[in-house]
Image (cartoon, rainbow, N blue to C red; front, side, top):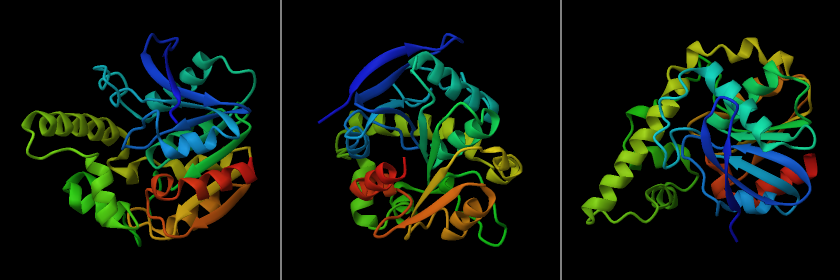
Length: 262
């Protein structure tokens, strides 16, 4: 099953796709640096209990929009512009993974009454000098799989998406798209120590579910406990047999946790 895709335009005039489907309370899902597709298994599981809206960030879709957002404030306000453009009936559940989790936390910090609940899946945005995260932007694909997935062999195949290395055109398209995505993500993910999100998340005023893969080698479990400590109404749950890409590796378990929480 696959969600429908529709086009929206924000008040700033930025056009983009949103994958939408399901029924129930509105849930806005913000994807991470790997992007999102309409057939994403987690989105389909979530759509069994929610009306899911998964916007594609500028720089991650087919449009040449990677220059439109420049810093963390741009991403945060664009997130709320997207929510406005969706014309929802009430405050949504706001969910995000990794980079999307960081943006969701920023959105919840600056507009603390405009969401009903918050779900953060291994969010980026914190820094502990005693547990520095590896530099994802300096890694080759097979090295990324080692830190992103519980099972690196399966992870490498998922990251390549079936690209045939013998097909120069397909490989070139993959490399260009990957460079665009990482270039956009790098605007807010590098360098993480300067984001200072820890100084703002005390403003989050809703119940927050924190989900973390037990095998996360990109953002260590020590960060999970940091988030849990700093957010006033946090509930931390650890997902077994999952790394940083827990929405991909354990979509059923993640969807069940979200359904039982919100």
